[in-house]
Length: 261
Image 1: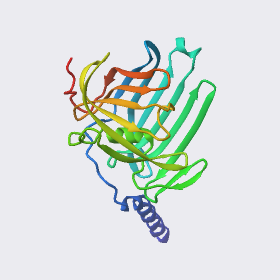
Image 2 (image 1 turned 135 degrees about the vertical axis):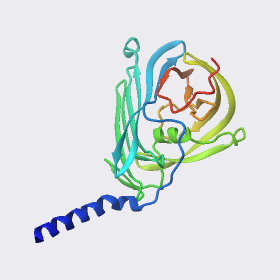
Image 3 (image 1 turned 30 degrees about the vertical axis):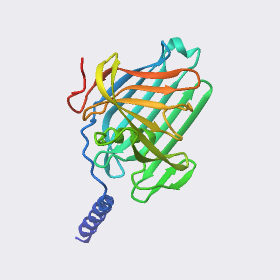
Image 4 (image 1 turned 90 degrees about the vertical axis):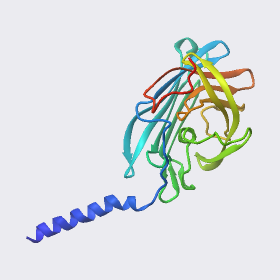
């Protein structure tokens, strides 16, 4: 008889431990911008040459640290005809809380020419610690990695901002928390292979840990609707610019009302 009481007691303890993590109250953010199944494909151009293909995808929901998270991937690969000039195989992955839209884990695997870098971090958002292969670092609650920051920014309301106003986020990379300002630059029309769209234009002021290692400015055209899909990215570099243009989209969270044709 006692062994049954012991087993029941053990089950109750395990149940309590499994649910103890839910005692922390996290923010809840309404997300109409993206959902599972979304996949965006871009041609990456250097001048008139298509140098690579990039994809941003939300393939699945997983569970990390007792929470449901969006598994989000970002990949950039140079095309075979460009590999002999500069071969690129970059992969980024983040796991973003479904309810609160903040990251629990981030991975970066860069292969560009002879350069390579691997970095990963687990964000203990309950205790304010980022755990990396190089050590543990204090972080503010809801700190972002660069990919999760972009998806979170897609859910923001830019309609009340004036030209030049910024929204400030916090971004962790390697061992430091950086300020990430997103500057609003008004509206514009963007014509890309996937169609013509009414857009808002933003400029992320990235100090470090971005999707590009250039020293130039980055401008992003987002659809002027609830989805805020990126349709064009222009990264100014020392010689010319690198552009990414949307060629295909699928699995959207809602209607793409900003599309003109």
